[in-house]
Length: 613
Image (cartoon, rainbow, N blue to C red):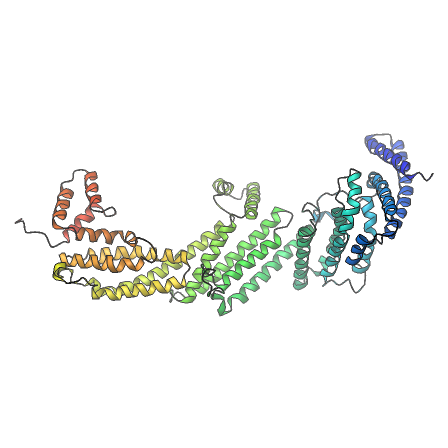
Protein backbone atom coordinates (compact mmCIF):
# COMPACT_ATOMS: atom_id res chain seq x y z
CA UNK A 1 0.00 0.00 0.00
CA UNK A 2 3.07 2.21 -0.23
CA UNK A 3 3.38 4.94 -2.82
CA UNK A 4 5.67 2.81 -4.98
CA UNK A 5 3.27 2.77 -7.92
CA UNK A 6 5.74 1.59 -10.64
CA UNK A 7 6.61 -1.56 -8.73
CA UNK A 8 2.98 -2.18 -7.81
CA UNK A 9 2.01 -1.83 -11.50
CA UNK A 10 4.69 -4.35 -12.55
CA UNK A 11 3.50 -6.86 -9.93
CA UNK A 12 -0.09 -6.35 -11.14
CA UNK A 13 1.04 -7.18 -14.71
CA UNK A 14 2.58 -10.48 -13.42
CA UNK A 15 -0.58 -11.28 -11.48
CA UNK A 16 -2.74 -10.58 -14.55
CA UNK A 17 -0.59 -12.92 -16.65
CA UNK A 18 -1.10 -15.59 -13.97
CA UNK A 19 -4.87 -15.03 -14.09
CA UNK A 20 -4.85 -15.47 -17.91
CA UNK A 21 -2.74 -18.67 -17.68
CA UNK A 22 -5.11 -20.15 -15.07
CA UNK A 23 -8.20 -19.71 -17.29
CA UNK A 24 -8.11 -23.39 -18.30
CA UNK A 25 -7.59 -24.62 -14.70
CA UNK A 26 -10.34 -26.43 -12.78
CA UNK A 27 -9.13 -25.01 -9.44
CA UNK A 28 -12.11 -22.68 -9.13
CA UNK A 29 -11.21 -21.28 -5.70
CA UNK A 30 -7.70 -20.39 -6.83
CA UNK A 31 -9.14 -18.77 -9.96
CA UNK A 32 -11.68 -16.65 -8.10
CA UNK A 33 -9.04 -15.64 -5.50
CA UNK A 34 -6.58 -14.49 -8.20
CA UNK A 35 -9.35 -12.62 -10.04
CA UNK A 36 -10.54 -10.89 -6.85
CA UNK A 37 -6.96 -9.88 -5.97
CA UNK A 38 -6.33 -8.49 -9.51
CA UNK A 39 -9.63 -6.62 -9.35
CA UNK A 40 -8.84 -5.11 -5.95
CA UNK A 41 -5.37 -3.84 -6.88
CA UNK A 42 -6.39 -2.81 -10.40
CA UNK A 43 -9.04 -0.46 -9.01
CA UNK A 44 -6.69 1.13 -6.46
CA UNK A 45 -3.90 1.67 -9.02
CA UNK A 46 -6.23 2.77 -11.83
CA UNK A 47 -7.99 5.34 -9.65
CA UNK A 48 -4.70 6.75 -8.35
CA UNK A 49 -3.00 6.89 -11.78
CA UNK A 50 -6.13 8.26 -13.49
CA UNK A 51 -6.45 11.19 -11.07
CA UNK A 52 -2.69 11.98 -11.38
CA UNK A 53 -2.87 11.71 -15.20
CA UNK A 54 -5.96 13.95 -15.37
CA UNK A 55 -4.17 16.53 -13.19
CA UNK A 56 -1.18 16.61 -15.57
CA UNK A 57 -3.51 16.89 -18.60
CA UNK A 58 -5.29 19.81 -16.91
CA UNK A 59 -1.94 21.60 -16.52
CA UNK A 60 -1.51 21.21 -20.29
CA UNK A 61 -5.04 22.66 -20.80
CA UNK A 62 -6.26 19.37 -22.24
CA UNK A 63 -8.55 18.94 -24.17
CA UNK A 64 -7.85 21.57 -26.85
CA UNK A 65 -11.36 22.65 -27.72
CA UNK A 66 -10.36 25.23 -30.31
CA UNK A 67 -7.71 25.09 -32.99
CA UNK A 68 -6.00 28.24 -31.63
CA UNK A 69 -5.67 26.54 -28.22
CA UNK A 70 -3.91 23.54 -29.77
CA UNK A 71 -1.55 25.90 -31.60
CA UNK A 72 -0.89 27.82 -28.37
CA UNK A 73 0.08 24.60 -26.60
CA UNK A 74 2.53 23.99 -29.44
CA UNK A 75 4.11 27.44 -29.21
CA UNK A 76 3.91 28.49 -25.52
CA UNK A 77 4.45 25.39 -23.41
CA UNK A 78 3.43 25.93 -19.80
CA UNK A 79 6.17 26.88 -17.33
CA UNK A 80 8.12 23.85 -16.15
CA UNK A 81 7.15 22.03 -19.34
CA UNK A 82 10.02 19.46 -19.34
CA UNK A 83 9.06 18.42 -15.83
CA UNK A 84 5.37 18.15 -16.75
CA UNK A 85 6.16 16.07 -19.85
CA UNK A 86 8.43 13.81 -17.79
CA UNK A 87 5.56 13.14 -15.37
CA UNK A 88 3.14 12.72 -18.31
CA UNK A 89 5.40 10.07 -19.83
CA UNK A 90 5.82 8.21 -16.51
CA UNK A 91 2.08 8.12 -15.82
CA UNK A 92 1.29 7.20 -19.43
CA UNK A 93 3.66 4.19 -19.27
CA UNK A 94 2.28 3.07 -15.90
CA UNK A 95 -1.27 3.24 -17.25
CA UNK A 96 -0.14 1.20 -20.24
CA UNK A 97 0.90 -1.54 -17.79
CA UNK A 98 -2.69 -1.71 -16.53
CA UNK A 99 -3.96 -2.36 -20.08
CA UNK A 100 -4.01 -6.19 -19.75
CA UNK A 101 -5.85 -6.20 -16.41
CA UNK A 102 -8.24 -3.50 -17.69
CA UNK A 103 -9.19 -5.63 -20.72
CA UNK A 104 -9.62 -8.64 -18.39
CA UNK A 105 -11.94 -6.86 -15.97
CA UNK A 106 -13.96 -4.36 -18.02
CA UNK A 107 -16.28 -5.58 -20.69
CA UNK A 108 -15.91 -3.62 -23.91
CA UNK A 109 -19.02 -1.68 -24.88
CA UNK A 110 -20.20 -3.13 -28.19
CA UNK A 111 -22.78 -2.04 -30.74
CA UNK A 112 -25.33 -4.77 -31.67
CA UNK A 113 -24.11 -7.57 -33.95
CA UNK A 114 -26.37 -6.47 -36.82
CA UNK A 115 -23.83 -3.71 -37.62
CA UNK A 116 -21.11 -6.32 -38.32
CA UNK A 117 -18.32 -4.10 -36.99
CA UNK A 118 -14.78 -5.44 -37.46
CA UNK A 119 -13.07 -6.98 -34.43
CA UNK A 120 -10.97 -4.31 -32.72
CA UNK A 121 -9.19 -4.27 -29.32
CA UNK A 122 -10.43 -1.65 -26.85
CA UNK A 123 -8.79 1.79 -27.00
CA UNK A 124 -5.62 1.81 -24.85
CA UNK A 125 -6.24 2.98 -21.26
CA UNK A 126 -4.27 6.30 -21.26
CA UNK A 127 -5.99 7.39 -24.50
CA UNK A 128 -9.36 6.39 -22.98
CA UNK A 129 -8.67 8.79 -20.10
CA UNK A 130 -7.67 11.52 -22.59
CA UNK A 131 -10.95 10.95 -24.45
CA UNK A 132 -13.16 11.15 -21.33
CA UNK A 133 -13.66 14.97 -21.27
CA UNK A 134 -14.49 14.98 -25.01
CA UNK A 135 -16.95 12.09 -24.59
CA UNK A 136 -18.67 14.06 -21.82
CA UNK A 137 -18.90 17.13 -24.04
CA UNK A 138 -20.27 15.07 -26.94
CA UNK A 139 -22.97 13.48 -24.76
CA UNK A 140 -23.85 16.85 -23.22
CA UNK A 141 -24.32 18.55 -26.60
CA UNK A 142 -25.59 15.76 -28.84
CA UNK A 143 -27.41 13.18 -26.72
CA UNK A 144 -29.65 15.18 -24.38
CA UNK A 145 -32.32 17.84 -24.82
CA UNK A 146 -29.82 20.57 -25.71
CA UNK A 147 -30.51 22.84 -28.70
CA UNK A 148 -27.40 21.42 -30.36
CA UNK A 149 -29.00 17.96 -30.53
CA UNK A 150 -31.12 18.36 -33.68
CA UNK A 151 -31.91 15.27 -35.72
CA UNK A 152 -31.95 17.29 -38.96
CA UNK A 153 -28.40 18.60 -38.37
CA UNK A 154 -26.01 15.60 -38.35
CA UNK A 155 -23.35 17.91 -39.79
CA UNK A 156 -23.03 19.58 -36.35
CA UNK A 157 -21.73 16.55 -34.50
CA UNK A 158 -19.80 15.22 -37.51
CA UNK A 159 -17.97 18.53 -37.95
CA UNK A 160 -17.32 18.71 -34.18
CA UNK A 161 -15.57 15.34 -34.16
CA UNK A 162 -13.48 16.22 -37.24
CA UNK A 163 -12.46 19.46 -35.50
CA UNK A 164 -11.42 17.60 -32.35
CA UNK A 165 -9.37 15.10 -34.37
CA UNK A 166 -7.67 17.95 -36.22
CA UNK A 167 -6.95 20.14 -33.19
CA UNK A 168 -5.35 17.29 -31.18
CA UNK A 169 -3.39 15.68 -34.03
CA UNK A 170 -0.20 17.72 -33.56
CA UNK A 171 0.01 17.10 -29.81
CA UNK A 172 -0.65 13.36 -30.22
CA UNK A 173 1.99 13.05 -32.96
CA UNK A 174 4.63 15.16 -31.21
CA UNK A 175 4.17 14.23 -27.55
CA UNK A 176 2.25 10.96 -27.19
CA UNK A 177 3.54 8.95 -30.16
CA UNK A 178 7.21 9.04 -28.98
CA UNK A 179 6.09 7.67 -25.56
CA UNK A 180 4.31 4.76 -27.26
CA UNK A 181 7.28 4.10 -29.55
CA UNK A 182 9.67 4.09 -26.58
CA UNK A 183 7.41 1.68 -24.67
CA UNK A 184 7.43 -0.66 -27.69
CA UNK A 185 3.67 -0.34 -28.11
CA UNK A 186 2.64 -0.76 -31.77
CA UNK A 187 -0.21 1.74 -31.60
CA UNK A 188 -0.70 4.96 -33.58
CA UNK A 189 -1.75 7.58 -31.02
CA UNK A 190 -3.66 9.74 -33.49
CA UNK A 191 -5.59 6.82 -35.01
CA UNK A 192 -6.36 5.39 -31.56
CA UNK A 193 -7.72 8.79 -30.50
CA UNK A 194 -9.75 9.06 -33.76
CA UNK A 195 -11.11 5.54 -33.26
CA UNK A 196 -12.43 6.47 -29.81
CA UNK A 197 -14.18 9.57 -31.19
CA UNK A 198 -15.60 7.71 -34.20
CA UNK A 199 -17.24 5.23 -31.82
CA UNK A 200 -19.26 8.18 -30.44
CA UNK A 201 -20.47 8.92 -33.98
CA UNK A 202 -21.40 5.28 -34.59
CA UNK A 203 -23.45 5.12 -31.37
CA UNK A 204 -25.15 8.40 -32.26
CA UNK A 205 -25.98 7.20 -35.79
CA UNK A 206 -27.28 3.87 -34.49
CA UNK A 207 -29.73 5.70 -32.21
CA UNK A 208 -30.71 8.47 -34.71
CA UNK A 209 -31.19 6.50 -37.94
CA UNK A 210 -34.34 4.57 -36.83
CA UNK A 211 -36.00 7.95 -36.07
CA UNK A 212 -35.54 9.40 -39.56
CA UNK A 213 -35.60 6.25 -41.68
CA UNK A 214 -38.90 7.12 -43.38
CA UNK A 215 -38.35 10.82 -43.94
CA UNK A 216 -36.67 10.79 -47.37
CA UNK A 217 -35.22 14.28 -47.16
CA UNK A 218 -33.80 13.91 -43.65
CA UNK A 219 -32.44 10.44 -44.39
CA UNK A 220 -30.88 11.55 -47.67
CA UNK A 221 -29.30 14.56 -45.95
CA UNK A 222 -27.88 12.30 -43.22
CA UNK A 223 -26.35 9.92 -45.80
CA UNK A 224 -24.82 12.87 -47.73
CA UNK A 225 -23.27 14.31 -44.56
CA UNK A 226 -21.97 10.92 -43.42
CA UNK A 227 -20.32 10.32 -46.81
CA UNK A 228 -18.63 13.75 -46.68
CA UNK A 229 -17.45 12.99 -43.13
CA UNK A 230 -16.09 9.59 -44.21
CA UNK A 231 -14.24 11.12 -47.15
CA UNK A 232 -12.50 13.72 -44.95
CA UNK A 233 -11.81 11.19 -42.18
CA UNK A 234 -10.01 8.85 -44.62
CA UNK A 235 -8.34 11.35 -46.95
CA UNK A 236 -7.31 14.11 -44.50
CA UNK A 237 -6.84 12.18 -41.25
CA UNK A 238 -5.65 8.85 -42.71
CA UNK A 239 -8.30 6.76 -40.93
CA UNK A 240 -7.84 3.15 -42.12
CA UNK A 241 -10.65 1.31 -43.93
CA UNK A 242 -10.10 -1.72 -41.67
CA UNK A 243 -11.42 0.20 -38.62
CA UNK A 244 -15.10 0.48 -37.67
CA UNK A 245 -16.65 3.33 -39.65
CA UNK A 246 -20.00 4.95 -40.44
CA UNK A 247 -20.25 2.76 -43.56
CA UNK A 248 -20.82 -0.23 -41.26
CA UNK A 249 -23.85 1.54 -39.77
CA UNK A 250 -25.19 2.42 -43.24
CA UNK A 251 -24.68 -1.24 -44.29
CA UNK A 252 -27.10 -2.53 -41.65
CA UNK A 253 -29.93 -4.32 -43.54
CA UNK A 254 -32.90 -1.99 -42.78
CA UNK A 255 -30.86 1.17 -43.24
CA UNK A 256 -29.13 -0.14 -46.36
CA UNK A 257 -32.38 -1.13 -48.13
CA UNK A 258 -33.76 2.31 -47.33
CA UNK A 259 -30.62 3.92 -48.75
CA UNK A 260 -30.97 1.92 -51.97
CA UNK A 261 -34.66 2.90 -52.27
CA UNK A 262 -33.96 6.60 -51.69
CA UNK A 263 -30.99 6.56 -54.10
CA UNK A 264 -33.19 4.98 -56.81
CA UNK A 265 -36.05 7.42 -56.14
CA UNK A 266 -33.87 10.53 -56.39
CA UNK A 267 -32.05 9.21 -59.47
CA UNK A 268 -35.36 8.57 -61.28
CA UNK A 269 -36.62 12.03 -60.30
CA UNK A 270 -33.44 13.53 -61.73
CA UNK A 271 -33.93 11.58 -64.97
CA UNK A 272 -37.56 12.75 -65.22
CA UNK A 273 -36.74 16.41 -64.80
CA UNK A 274 -33.73 16.07 -67.09
CA UNK A 275 -35.60 14.62 -70.07
CA UNK A 276 -38.50 17.06 -69.80
CA UNK A 277 -36.36 19.99 -71.00
CA UNK A 278 -35.70 20.64 -74.70
CA UNK A 279 -32.14 21.83 -74.03
CA UNK A 280 -31.02 18.34 -72.95
CA UNK A 281 -30.44 17.26 -76.56
CA UNK A 282 -27.85 19.98 -77.15
CA UNK A 283 -24.21 19.46 -76.21
CA UNK A 284 -22.96 22.02 -73.72
CA UNK A 285 -19.60 21.95 -75.54
CA UNK A 286 -21.05 22.40 -79.03
CA UNK A 287 -18.95 25.51 -79.69
CA UNK A 288 -15.65 23.94 -78.54
CA UNK A 289 -14.78 21.49 -81.32
CA UNK A 290 -11.82 19.76 -79.68
CA UNK A 291 -13.88 18.98 -76.54
CA UNK A 292 -17.01 18.04 -78.44
CA UNK A 293 -15.68 15.11 -80.47
CA UNK A 294 -18.43 12.80 -79.25
CA UNK A 295 -21.19 15.43 -79.67
CA UNK A 296 -22.67 14.25 -76.36
CA UNK A 297 -26.11 15.70 -75.62
CA UNK A 298 -26.47 17.18 -72.18
CA UNK A 299 -28.84 14.46 -70.94
CA UNK A 300 -26.26 11.69 -71.54
CA UNK A 301 -23.53 13.72 -69.86
CA UNK A 302 -25.74 14.44 -66.82
CA UNK A 303 -26.88 10.80 -66.64
CA UNK A 304 -23.35 9.39 -66.66
CA UNK A 305 -22.31 11.97 -64.05
CA UNK A 306 -25.24 10.75 -61.93
CA UNK A 307 -23.96 7.15 -62.23
CA UNK A 308 -20.43 8.31 -61.41
CA UNK A 309 -21.65 10.10 -58.28
CA UNK A 310 -23.52 6.94 -57.18
CA UNK A 311 -20.29 4.91 -57.64
CA UNK A 312 -18.43 7.47 -55.56
CA UNK A 313 -21.04 7.16 -52.81
CA UNK A 314 -20.97 3.38 -52.47
CA UNK A 315 -17.37 2.50 -53.34
CA UNK A 316 -16.24 2.62 -49.67
CA UNK A 317 -18.89 0.20 -48.42
CA UNK A 318 -17.17 -2.46 -46.30
CA UNK A 319 -18.52 -5.59 -48.04
CA UNK A 320 -18.65 -6.74 -51.68
CA UNK A 321 -22.30 -8.03 -51.54
CA UNK A 322 -23.45 -4.52 -50.56
CA UNK A 323 -21.46 -2.96 -53.42
CA UNK A 324 -22.97 -5.49 -55.83
CA UNK A 325 -26.47 -4.42 -54.78
CA UNK A 326 -25.56 -0.85 -55.72
CA UNK A 327 -24.10 -2.08 -59.01
CA UNK A 328 -27.47 -3.73 -59.77
CA UNK A 329 -29.16 -0.40 -59.05
CA UNK A 330 -26.81 1.31 -61.55
CA UNK A 331 -27.56 -1.34 -64.18
CA UNK A 332 -31.31 -0.86 -63.60
CA UNK A 333 -30.90 2.90 -64.07
CA UNK A 334 -28.96 2.37 -67.33
CA UNK A 335 -31.73 0.10 -68.55
CA UNK A 336 -34.39 2.60 -67.52
CA UNK A 337 -32.55 5.40 -69.34
CA UNK A 338 -32.15 3.22 -72.46
CA UNK A 339 -35.92 2.55 -72.48
CA UNK A 340 -36.65 6.27 -72.10
CA UNK A 341 -34.30 7.10 -75.00
CA UNK A 342 -35.99 4.38 -77.09
CA UNK A 343 -39.41 5.91 -76.39
CA UNK A 344 -38.26 9.39 -77.46
CA UNK A 345 -36.55 7.84 -80.50
CA UNK A 346 -39.80 6.13 -81.59
CA UNK A 347 -41.51 9.54 -81.71
CA UNK A 348 -38.76 10.71 -84.07
CA UNK A 349 -38.60 7.72 -86.44
CA UNK A 350 -40.36 9.59 -89.25
CA UNK A 351 -37.47 12.04 -89.36
CA UNK A 352 -34.38 9.93 -88.67
CA UNK A 353 -32.02 12.62 -89.98
CA UNK A 354 -33.35 15.34 -87.70
CA UNK A 355 -31.30 16.86 -84.93
CA UNK A 356 -33.07 15.13 -82.03
CA UNK A 357 -32.82 11.64 -83.55
CA UNK A 358 -29.08 12.15 -84.08
CA UNK A 359 -28.74 13.47 -80.51
CA UNK A 360 -30.38 10.30 -79.15
CA UNK A 361 -28.02 8.18 -81.25
CA UNK A 362 -25.00 10.14 -79.93
CA UNK A 363 -26.30 9.66 -76.37
CA UNK A 364 -26.64 5.87 -76.80
CA UNK A 365 -23.14 5.69 -78.28
CA UNK A 366 -21.63 7.79 -75.48
CA UNK A 367 -23.21 5.72 -72.68
CA UNK A 368 -22.08 2.49 -74.33
CA UNK A 369 -18.51 3.82 -74.77
CA UNK A 370 -18.25 5.04 -71.16
CA UNK A 371 -19.59 1.75 -69.75
CA UNK A 372 -17.00 -0.15 -71.83
CA UNK A 373 -14.30 2.12 -70.33
CA UNK A 374 -15.62 1.56 -66.81
CA UNK A 375 -15.51 -2.20 -67.35
CA UNK A 376 -11.67 -1.92 -67.37
CA UNK A 377 -11.60 0.17 -64.20
CA UNK A 378 -9.94 -1.57 -61.21
CA UNK A 379 -12.95 -0.94 -58.95
CA UNK A 380 -15.38 -2.67 -61.35
CA UNK A 381 -12.90 -5.48 -62.05
CA UNK A 382 -12.79 -6.15 -58.30
CA UNK A 383 -16.60 -6.15 -58.25
CA UNK A 384 -16.57 -8.59 -61.17
CA UNK A 385 -14.38 -10.90 -59.11
CA UNK A 386 -16.76 -10.57 -56.15
CA UNK A 387 -19.76 -11.24 -58.41
CA UNK A 388 -18.00 -14.34 -59.70
CA UNK A 389 -17.71 -15.72 -56.17
CA UNK A 390 -21.38 -14.95 -55.42
CA UNK A 391 -22.59 -16.53 -58.69
CA UNK A 392 -20.41 -19.59 -58.12
CA UNK A 393 -21.86 -20.06 -54.62
CA UNK A 394 -25.45 -19.73 -55.86
CA UNK A 395 -24.93 -21.66 -59.14
CA UNK A 396 -26.58 -18.67 -60.82
CA UNK A 397 -24.61 -18.89 -64.10
CA UNK A 398 -23.61 -21.57 -66.57
CA UNK A 399 -19.99 -22.78 -66.61
CA UNK A 400 -19.42 -20.94 -69.89
CA UNK A 401 -20.65 -17.61 -68.42
CA UNK A 402 -18.55 -18.13 -65.28
CA UNK A 403 -15.54 -18.88 -67.48
CA UNK A 404 -16.08 -15.70 -69.51
CA UNK A 405 -16.36 -13.59 -66.34
CA UNK A 406 -13.31 -15.23 -64.77
CA UNK A 407 -11.15 -14.77 -67.88
CA UNK A 408 -12.31 -11.13 -68.13
CA UNK A 409 -13.76 -11.81 -71.60
CA UNK A 410 -17.03 -10.35 -70.43
CA UNK A 411 -17.62 -7.55 -67.94
CA UNK A 412 -20.21 -6.55 -65.34
CA UNK A 413 -21.76 -4.15 -67.88
CA UNK A 414 -21.90 -6.54 -70.85
CA UNK A 415 -25.68 -7.00 -70.84
CA UNK A 416 -26.20 -3.23 -70.81
CA UNK A 417 -23.59 -2.60 -73.52
CA UNK A 418 -25.09 -5.29 -75.79
CA UNK A 419 -28.58 -3.76 -75.54
CA UNK A 420 -27.22 -0.26 -76.21
CA UNK A 421 -25.17 -1.50 -79.17
CA UNK A 422 -28.25 -3.21 -80.61
CA UNK A 423 -30.26 0.02 -80.26
CA UNK A 424 -27.40 1.96 -81.86
CA UNK A 425 -27.27 -0.42 -84.83
CA UNK A 426 -31.08 -0.26 -85.29
CA UNK A 427 -30.99 3.53 -85.30
CA UNK A 428 -28.06 3.70 -87.71
CA UNK A 429 -29.72 1.17 -90.01
CA UNK A 430 -32.87 3.31 -90.04
CA UNK A 431 -30.81 6.37 -91.02
CA UNK A 432 -28.92 4.47 -93.71
CA UNK A 433 -32.19 3.10 -95.15
CA UNK A 434 -33.72 6.58 -95.18
CA UNK A 435 -30.77 8.17 -97.01
CA UNK A 436 -30.54 5.17 -99.34
CA UNK A 437 -34.23 5.57 -100.32
CA UNK A 438 -33.61 9.25 -101.12
CA UNK A 439 -30.54 8.34 -103.17
CA UNK A 440 -32.48 5.67 -105.10
CA UNK A 441 -35.22 8.21 -105.90
CA UNK A 442 -32.59 10.66 -107.11
CA UNK A 443 -30.97 7.94 -109.26
CA UNK A 444 -34.07 7.12 -111.34
CA UNK A 445 -32.98 9.23 -114.31
CA UNK A 446 -29.44 7.89 -114.10
CA UNK A 447 -30.72 4.32 -114.29
CA UNK A 448 -32.44 5.15 -117.58
CA UNK A 449 -29.35 6.69 -119.15
CA UNK A 450 -28.78 5.36 -122.74
CA UNK A 451 -25.48 3.63 -122.03
CA UNK A 452 -25.73 1.77 -125.32
CA UNK A 453 -25.50 4.80 -127.56
CA UNK A 454 -23.25 7.35 -125.86
CA UNK A 455 -20.47 8.97 -127.91
CA UNK A 456 -17.00 7.52 -127.37
CA UNK A 457 -14.23 9.42 -125.60
CA UNK A 458 -12.42 10.41 -128.78
CA UNK A 459 -15.63 12.05 -130.10
CA UNK A 460 -15.75 14.40 -127.09
CA UNK A 461 -13.42 17.33 -126.47
CA UNK A 462 -13.55 16.77 -122.73
CA UNK A 463 -15.38 14.29 -120.51
CA UNK A 464 -18.06 15.76 -118.23
CA UNK A 465 -20.40 14.36 -115.59
CA UNK A 466 -23.67 12.84 -116.85
CA UNK A 467 -26.40 15.41 -116.16
CA UNK A 468 -28.70 12.61 -114.93
CA UNK A 469 -26.15 11.79 -112.16
CA UNK A 470 -26.38 15.29 -110.66
CA UNK A 471 -29.49 14.74 -108.46
CA UNK A 472 -27.99 11.49 -107.13
CA UNK A 473 -24.63 13.08 -106.23
CA UNK A 474 -26.19 16.25 -104.79
CA UNK A 475 -28.53 14.26 -102.52
CA UNK A 476 -25.63 12.13 -101.40
CA UNK A 477 -23.36 15.12 -100.75
CA UNK A 478 -26.02 17.03 -98.76
CA UNK A 479 -26.89 14.05 -96.57
CA UNK A 480 -23.25 13.24 -95.87
CA UNK A 481 -22.53 16.83 -94.84
CA UNK A 482 -25.66 16.97 -92.69
CA UNK A 483 -24.89 13.75 -90.80
CA UNK A 484 -21.18 14.51 -90.48
CA UNK A 485 -22.19 17.65 -88.54
CA UNK A 486 -24.82 15.89 -86.40
CA UNK A 487 -23.23 12.51 -85.59
CA UNK A 488 -20.05 11.96 -83.65
CA UNK A 489 -17.01 10.79 -85.65
CA UNK A 490 -17.21 7.06 -84.81
CA UNK A 491 -20.96 6.88 -85.59
CA UNK A 492 -20.61 8.80 -88.83
CA UNK A 493 -17.86 6.43 -89.96
CA UNK A 494 -20.14 3.43 -89.41
CA UNK A 495 -22.97 5.30 -91.14
CA UNK A 496 -21.12 6.13 -94.36
CA UNK A 497 -19.56 2.67 -94.57
CA UNK A 498 -22.99 1.01 -94.24
CA UNK A 499 -24.38 3.41 -96.85
CA UNK A 500 -21.50 2.78 -99.26
CA UNK A 501 -22.02 -0.98 -98.99
CA UNK A 502 -25.68 -0.62 -100.06
CA UNK A 503 -24.83 1.96 -102.71
CA UNK A 504 -22.12 -0.24 -104.21
CA UNK A 505 -24.53 -3.17 -104.58
CA UNK A 506 -27.33 -0.92 -105.89
CA UNK A 507 -25.24 0.68 -108.66
CA UNK A 508 -23.75 -2.70 -109.54
CA UNK A 509 -27.05 -4.60 -109.70
CA UNK A 510 -29.58 -1.94 -110.73
CA UNK A 511 -27.51 0.20 -113.10
CA UNK A 512 -24.58 -1.85 -114.39
CA UNK A 513 -26.08 -5.35 -114.63
CA UNK A 514 -29.39 -3.94 -115.92
CA UNK A 515 -27.83 -2.25 -118.97
CA UNK A 516 -25.56 -2.86 -121.97
CA UNK A 517 -22.63 -0.56 -122.62
CA UNK A 518 -20.93 0.62 -125.75
CA UNK A 519 -17.42 2.05 -125.53
CA UNK A 520 -18.70 5.58 -124.79
CA UNK A 521 -21.20 4.32 -122.18
CA UNK A 522 -18.51 2.33 -120.33
CA UNK A 523 -16.13 5.33 -120.36
CA UNK A 524 -18.91 7.66 -119.15
CA UNK A 525 -19.83 5.29 -116.30
CA UNK A 526 -16.18 5.06 -115.24
CA UNK A 527 -15.82 8.85 -115.35
CA UNK A 528 -19.00 9.37 -113.27
CA UNK A 529 -17.87 6.85 -110.68
CA UNK A 530 -14.12 7.43 -110.36
CA UNK A 531 -14.09 11.20 -110.86
CA UNK A 532 -17.36 12.17 -109.17
CA UNK A 533 -18.93 9.52 -106.90
CA UNK A 534 -15.79 8.11 -105.24
CA UNK A 535 -14.26 11.56 -104.48
CA UNK A 536 -17.38 12.42 -102.43
CA UNK A 537 -15.99 9.98 -99.82
CA UNK A 538 -12.32 10.96 -100.12
CA UNK A 539 -12.78 13.34 -97.19
CA UNK A 540 -13.52 10.32 -94.94
CA UNK A 541 -10.88 7.85 -96.16
CA UNK A 542 -7.76 7.73 -98.33
CA UNK A 543 -8.97 5.25 -100.97
CA UNK A 544 -12.77 5.44 -101.25
CA UNK A 545 -12.74 3.18 -104.36
CA UNK A 546 -11.85 0.27 -102.06
CA UNK A 547 -15.30 0.57 -100.50
CA UNK A 548 -16.98 0.37 -103.93
CA UNK A 549 -15.35 -2.93 -104.94
CA UNK A 550 -18.20 -4.18 -107.19
CA UNK A 551 -18.54 -0.87 -109.07
CA UNK A 552 -14.79 -0.33 -109.35
CA UNK A 553 -14.13 -3.82 -110.75
CA UNK A 554 -17.17 -3.68 -113.07
CA UNK A 555 -15.79 -0.42 -114.54
CA UNK A 556 -12.40 -2.15 -115.10
CA UNK A 557 -14.05 -5.00 -117.04
CA UNK A 558 -16.29 -2.70 -119.09
CA UNK A 559 -13.33 -0.46 -120.01
CA UNK A 560 -10.72 -3.11 -120.85
CA UNK A 561 -9.35 -2.52 -124.34
CA UNK A 562 -10.66 -4.95 -126.95
CA UNK A 563 -7.52 -7.10 -127.05
CA UNK A 564 -7.35 -7.61 -123.28
CA UNK A 565 -11.11 -8.26 -123.09
CA UNK A 566 -10.96 -10.94 -125.83
CA UNK A 567 -7.97 -12.55 -124.20
CA UNK A 568 -9.67 -12.58 -120.77
CA UNK A 569 -12.84 -14.05 -122.31
CA UNK A 570 -10.85 -16.86 -123.90
CA UNK A 571 -8.95 -17.59 -120.70
CA UNK A 572 -12.17 -17.74 -118.67
CA UNK A 573 -13.91 -19.99 -121.20
CA UNK A 574 -11.00 -22.36 -121.62
CA UNK A 575 -9.67 -22.29 -118.03
CA UNK A 576 -9.79 -25.85 -116.82
CA UNK A 577 -8.56 -24.91 -113.36
CA UNK A 578 -10.00 -22.30 -111.05
CA UNK A 579 -6.46 -21.11 -110.20
CA UNK A 580 -5.55 -19.99 -113.72
CA UNK A 581 -8.84 -18.06 -114.02
CA UNK A 582 -8.19 -16.32 -110.66
CA UNK A 583 -4.64 -15.42 -111.75
CA UNK A 584 -5.96 -13.94 -115.01
CA UNK A 585 -8.55 -11.87 -113.11
CA UNK A 586 -6.00 -10.67 -110.54
CA UNK A 587 -3.75 -9.58 -113.41
CA UNK A 588 -6.33 -7.05 -114.63
CA UNK A 589 -7.16 -5.91 -111.06
CA UNK A 590 -10.20 -8.10 -110.26
CA UNK A 591 -10.21 -9.53 -106.71
CA UNK A 592 -13.80 -9.26 -105.50
CA UNK A 593 -15.93 -10.41 -108.45
CA UNK A 594 -16.36 -14.10 -109.16
CA UNK A 595 -15.57 -15.66 -112.58
CA UNK A 596 -19.27 -15.94 -113.51
CA UNK A 597 -19.83 -12.23 -112.66
CA UNK A 598 -16.94 -11.25 -114.93
CA UNK A 599 -18.35 -13.36 -117.79
CA UNK A 600 -21.74 -11.63 -117.37
CA UNK A 601 -20.06 -8.21 -117.42
CA UNK A 602 -18.07 -9.07 -120.56
CA UNK A 603 -21.35 -9.98 -122.24
CA UNK A 604 -22.76 -6.54 -121.39
CA UNK A 605 -20.17 -4.94 -123.69
CA UNK A 606 -21.43 -4.22 -127.20
CA UNK A 607 -18.16 -3.08 -128.78
CA UNK A 608 -16.91 -6.53 -129.83
CA UNK A 609 -15.25 -6.79 -133.32
CA UNK A 610 -17.23 -8.61 -135.99
CA UNK A 611 -15.44 -11.95 -136.34
CA UNK A 612 -17.99 -13.46 -138.68
CA UNK A 613 -19.25 -15.86 -136.02
